[in-house]
Length: 163
Image (cartoon, helix red, strand yellow):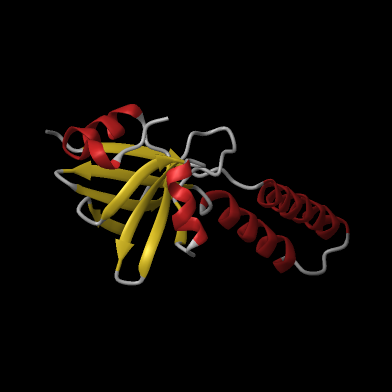
């Protein structure tokens, strides 16, 4: 069976988008003011550098992969740097269910740690992977596609609750 991958782009919050636009407007305004009254060229330069960092360093994706009973979760920044977030053996998975499913209530009521590896899009279909770890129970929120769920269901059908 081949390894199955899912890439999910994390959406930026409205506040971050507004802040990025505000920094750009301030940078342009300070540059225009600097042409009229040459005081400090460093201010527009710093503002443009901050805007550039906000623009190009804010792109994030999450990658989920599944192969032979192991799920891996990775964060990708700017389509270049990768950081392994978590690796989960299916032997430690208690349940994989759609967000809001009744089978998840007891885990949330008992104070399970929640890790959100989704796009933060309110319209997306989320699933939660409940895992037993050394630190207790962890709920990992993901956005798997049909191929990902089918690959998991081949061997671990009893742990997957479908919508």
